[in-house]
Length: 488
Ligand SMILES: *[C@@H]1O[C@H](CO)[C@@H](O)[C@H](O)[C@H]1NC(C)=O
Ligand SMILES: *[C@@H]1O[C@H](CO)[C@@H](O)[C@H](O)[C@H]1NC(C)=O
Image (cartoon, rainbow, N blue to C red):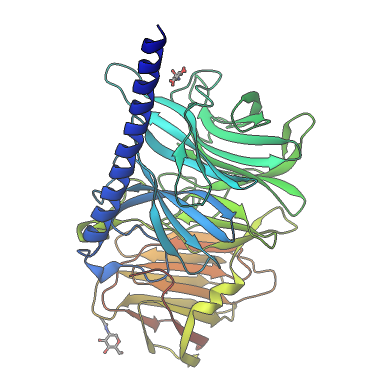
């Protein structure tokens, strides 16, 4: 009896220990593979200051957090091909949110694909909470919430007691993207889901220990035209209000609005921790009007600012870099601010200026004048809004093109990409009337004024950029070459 007991204890130990070793081996093998495969990437479209995978596919930002003196950003990652596949969590860190370094892949799939989630810091530990997506033949897909722990922000161990939230109250197969935070004595988490009749919801839970969770309420639910599924929710205070940020699927385009396949946007409201009631004060509003922006996530910076990073991509679009061995990227980090009209302004961080290298132009960009710019450049343009603006961006050696426009009679900023539908939105600057344009090897991000209108779009020029003033006013323009913010 005693012998049997000891034997089975030994076997149990050997099994657990053995599978730990296997996991360790799998991680080392993966890092070896990444190192080798990343050297074979064709660099033609490779971004110089935007986070991208060393090799392979990435989508949603995950686990954006500050831990032991560094910002951590994880991302949905499939290293073995430049298309979506069984999800891992890739990992980068930064001291300043502008320059980033790669860390070993944080989570590898076992039985489960490691879908999106968040990170919290509990004393000395970092805790990842993510959605385990399990596909088994003959049964419906299963999404439940898992934890993984780390003492160093590099090595992560999945919790042996997973799942910590096995199912949503209605057992929906779509139950994902936990975003956790602490408020006073409790941990809270919101999770994206849907009702039985396909209406997007955000569910709110709380816990004393991150392990035992109590369902509290449906924090928010879509009206009929706001989508069948709400993904990637986030919930935070900004300017004395509560912001519910999420990425709905299934909203139909309405004029200039909601033109991408899926949206990312927000509702401003008030939240009461006594009743768990979120009282919206606004409709759902889009956050970014470009072609490629989704699944954004925020964290609080160590100086109390609300910082956001989005996936610089969109589902079911072509990624021309895929043939080069990689696909997808993150936007630059943006600081959020709530203005007096309950509208979120998005601005580049102050420290973004630290990437500036040589000033390559400073003066009037005259009619039909061409400004030759390096692949990674920043351009500041002062604008007389009573006149038309028409700028062409194209590759110095061909490739993709885009146009940036303003027509005072219409009052909209327009970003047009060759062979694509325009993206446009009304712009009524409060004070600052400048445009700030961030160009990278295959991307543009346009910030108008104080961040009232922002566009993020991937464009694929070859050999750096030519910026041509096709409008009828000379534009006071300053341009900088930008230094690298990510490793080659
Ligand atoms: C998913 O699997 C867990 C066991 O890991 C189970 O408890 C849960 O009920 C399943 N969820 C659904 C929606 O069936
Ligand atoms: C870019 O501008 C330079 C200088 O005007 C010009 O020589 C070159 O042909 C331009 N490239 C393209 C693709 O138009």
